[in-house]
Structure formats: C-alpha cells, structure tokens
Length: 116
Image 1 (tube, one colour):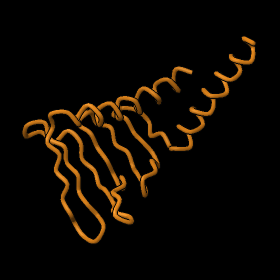
Image 2 (cartoon, one colour; image 1 turned 120 degrees about the vertical axis):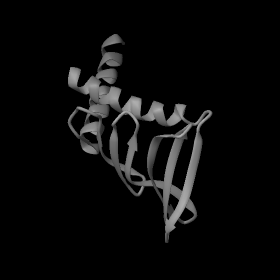
Image 3 (spheres, rainbow, N blue to C red; image 1 turned 180 degrees about the vertical axis):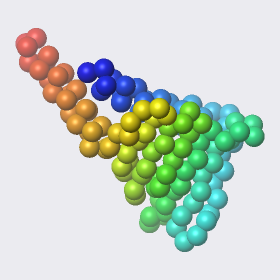
C-alpha cells in the first residue's frame, strides 16, 4: 500500500510541477520537423520542464520523453503516458498506474456498499 501511495505521489508531483509552472514562467514551443515540436519551460534562465509535442489534425499532444527539474522522466506516445520514473525510484508503467487507480476505485465502492 505504501508503494502505491508513492506512485500516486510521484505522479501528483509531476502534474503539480506542470500546472504550477503555468504561472509566471516562460514557455517556448519550437517547430523541429514535420509535425514535431520541442517544448521548454523556463524559470528565469533555468529550464524547469522539457519535452515534445506532436501535431495531429492541428492539435498538439504530448509525445516522446518529458523531463522536469526534479529528475522525473516520463515517456508519452501520442498523448498516452507509457511510463514515468521519479528520481531515485523505479519506473512505473501506465498499466501499473491504471491498476492502482482501479484498486482505489474498487476500495471506494466497497466502502460505499458497506456503509449502506
């Protein structure tokens, strides 16, 4: 159970960093080739997050390797996370994360059923 909490905590940190960096940060999107774009987020001169977007039907979706300044790395394929690796921890696959989410949903449903 502690391992599952660590997985969710790492994912939450990765998302919070991405969301919190939207405020007061400089974001640079650069066209590389074809439908591939490079993304960099800066805090002053320091890069806080970097990754790639892919344009599909005029919509940019996350794609490729993404890294943040806390050492978290994630791989996305056409907008879907394949794996995430927080610094100093093991790599978690999207299947492991989905399984954890489903276990939590089942636990919540069981609690609701027993409280009726």
